Length: 468
Image (cartoon, rainbow, N blue to C red):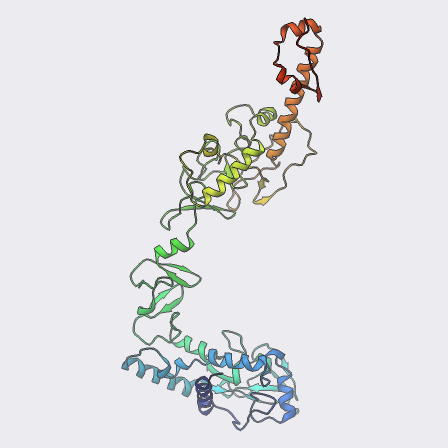
């Protein structure tokens, strides 16, 4: 520990002990401990520290000693009592601080006394936990709290932060004990920027916190915020421009930033402008503000038909849904376009029509009632009708609820290929029922270079064009 800091701590602790009320100030640290309660015999010191958590016992050169130093600086801030540790106080503020410190020491400051509870007495009740302290137990007494008020050693805590009172130094106020920091904050506000007590007549207050007028500025650019608009994040004020550049969200539809003055819609980590052009069905562009919607891996839809890529006003049959489904390559392009759009990047002028329409649908699991449901597996009979049992309730937590999960687009592609193969097979069977001569007469000759590519039911047939 630096020499200046050690001298400051020693001076502060000595000053607090000199002004505190205690029955015995003659104690000193043994060779084993950096600090011990004053006035105790060695066996009583051991009994006292046996009640304290092991990592809080101030053994020399131990984590407990380092924690004690940290707590001394935190619970007893030097700038709460000495003007020399404050920043740029005027003469009036220095006088105010001196009177403030003297009053606290005179009326509230004390130091706990550790001693054995008399065996001849029936016992007492701990002021913190309400449990009994029996005769012969070690206890902490605070004279400012009144005769007979006592605590278990592990219960002698600050009423605000619930931390052990370092070196048993306490401030008594309205029937409770506090550390120096939180007792000062009960009397005067503390600046969140410089951590000093605000002694001026004016200050800025926001969300239950206080600042000096000159210290209320943007946490990022340090621009003064007095009389200006600001936004709080993690108890830190930001000007509007810094907040937008650091924390504003991007619209998942248009890719533009959502300004702090514009409304936004949020669902499962996604964000949209609260406009009809942005918060709309990805397929038919129907506005979805105030309406239930179907989310599907980055996109939102107004209906099941739109989520499958079919005409919402057309047939709702399964076959039409399969025929209008998207291929896996198209889905890949859709996903890439969506990811680039979320970064706010615009597509180039030479992009194709298919790329520009890539926000229509992305394959993924369906969401029901705000929970992700598994997609339909391949055990579902192919070619069957998609269930029309759809329920679209209005809800504050999840504005859409489908009882049946929607088939993934990879199934749509499989069913489409299966239908095409069945159609080819039927055509081939019909052709082989016709006599070969008639079939040959009705079939135009193919160039020889393409004869080896004719594929019927997995078998390649070579036809001699010299046949007459």
